[in-house]
Length: 196
Ligand SMILES: [Fe+2]
Image (tube, rainbow, N blue to C red; front, side):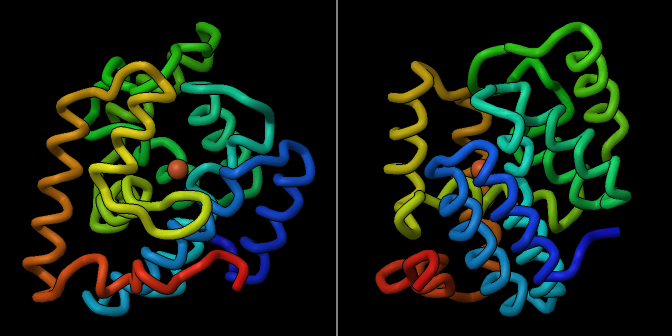
């Protein structure tokens, strides 16, 4: 289950009201990329858009690192949007090991256990990988070069898990091969601006 495009947009605006920041437009850029790539691949563009738009919705509850993952998961589950909840969880990891999170471990015991267990259970599908890819190229002002964006995150957080770094590079190559097209062209990197 996931909300309509309109409902997803409403949820994001409401969340930005609780915790304003560049994450809102970062989410819009991720949504735009996911929609464009999904259309090219024969996936559901509307679903991809909604999942991209809400992947960081846990930020509604404040400035947290790993905490935004459990906040997003629990929030989306409370609305019955289990497919979004899974994305809130899986977008931050390259595999099923929560210890590889890029950022501070600022969760309490209960939240950490939730992330650990749900991540172990989760079956990653095309949409999980798609949102990971989009997260890695979505800046707040527009689409970014992946290396530039990951370097930016590394500078802000002090570290970037090398496994996730490599996995993002591989995802880009994998999707480009599947699309038969340059990723930045598909998402119109040069021209797309959130909110325009
Ligand atoms: Fe994100």
